[in-house]
Image (cartoon, rainbow, N blue to C red):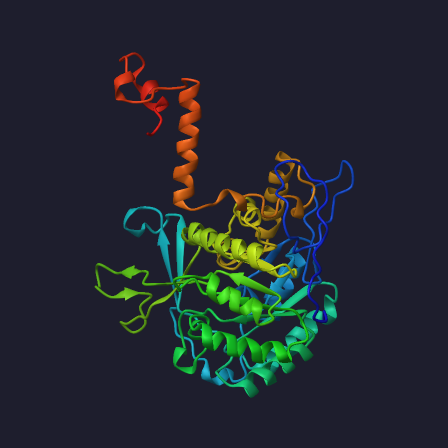
Length: 413
């Protein structure tokens, strides 16, 4: 178990021109001369062999599958969310629905969207805690993170934190973001969408926790930086984003019933997989910019959303993520996926001569700005191009020769 301590900012080292100077949230580990790109990261005092983390959900539902994740080489595992009273958690079947790329949901088409209406763990808390203890006994140097969620009750939160920490977990991820199930008990997104409630509950958590705490953010909110800011100001060492997006997967046009269909009925659920990746990138970018501008104490960012390739992960890291979580991708492609992710991320690093994750983390963040800024930049660029007479300036300059090339050369006025 890693005792709670904020990560200290690391002095910037001389990097290649594409690396953007800025606050360091993870300790870089440089590869030896001529060696392979080093994927290891150290985040909030947690040392991981690579930045790939099993996201909380079915891939972390019991000892067997979490052991499999460690054996396959995942950097860390976040277990399926637990609470004090598992008897209140009652799941239904079927609980998943899929969106495929081919028209009309062709059975063999590529899965691009995945919806679930699954709740948190329905296994007894004591059973899960015993399995955490066994995992830490067998893998003492690997990172196991407990995911927790509880009702609006300070004493319950404190009891849950104490019991989960006693199992030996290295950190806690707080589920403030599950979009379905038990909102009437002020659990999950019901907290993450209410900043006043979030601030109070984060206060309870951080006065009790002795290991690093990550707050998992919901995308089902107008401005995701608001709850992220509150969580960090309330003492959390990091934030994770995004959890699933509230959705209705579709209607079966033969039966006229919604999917997934349980006894003829359904309920909105959480949407994930490849289709959410661009949305997740935007949310992570917004949080990363806020963190860079407002925080300087080493808080971390764990990115989640539609990761199936090493390039997907590289995009998140370029926006400032310290780690990258994968959940639905594991459900579709299996635990060996981590080997492919690591190999592809290293290929990207070789292409750009990066020897460590830290060398390119956040490198793309400065290239985002407001639309007004874009207009100003383009106007300035147009002035410069006009000065050197590069390309056509307007319709009146068309000659009719090479029409396509002339059209492409036009610049906006």
